[in-house]
Image (cartoon, rainbow, N blue to C red; front, side, top):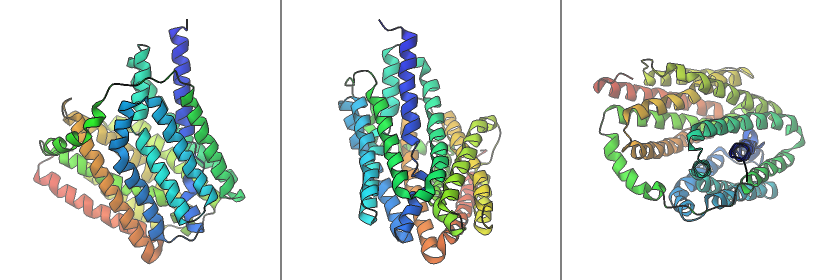
Length: 391
């Protein structure tokens, strides 16, 4: 008979290994640059990001139903291996259609694993009577995911001079290792239908919930704007290329930026009980983005590191503030609407960057995003003042 403590350690070790290697993807900081080196225009590169986002978004509900009908462990493994096939397409076909196929497969993976991963962790902990450790385990998994991103960027920096093929091979290997970690979990069991199958009902009801208090639409719209701004991180590599950085430097500084973002996320909780005007942070981000567009060379990633500290922190603060305004019956509905708004604003962010890059380069695109952020901040400020909100 396996001792509970030993079994718990073995179980969490597999989840932690999965979390690290699922994001230890060396091509992360360089795939946009790879697209540019394949002579794709800014509009074509943006279309790839849009296809990626829409694939995941449109398939989220039907794949959620699959995760309710079939063992979540199996669904997770299938999703992981599908992404491995996507990276393989980039390795074999370095052209627009090959890249598009890779992103479609990646989008399918994201849809299959969205929510499934968390549900599987909960199921396995509940099976051994350790569900009280869920928050601790998922928190550590999140930290390891970010660690994987940072270390993968530093690894890509050392391999950048050897070309994209070797980096893609290492990325595929990391994906396979993450699948093996899930495969080594206990025998998969089917699960009872969950709330995921009621997504559209939640979304319809959520519109009513969002407008039940003036503060909720403010927070949802704020997070949507943040998601739109967040779209620019897909273009960091291309932006740094315009600043004269090599692929090795691009990968290194991308890792540095995400490391600062992690630090910002760690300490932001100290502001939980402070009276903050969230819309003011948008003005600050606009200034930072505009400054990054103006400065030369290595100053740009240094400034964007500060930006990412605020960006990661904003996500955390948003969730804290929103959860305080909701009760248990409306939490899922409002969150569904918030996710929908984030998707829409994320697509708008891609559009602004693409428009600017097509006319004056990615540096000009960043300036346009800064202008769009200022306009958004003014509108949110006006709404907050009209509704007499104190956030």
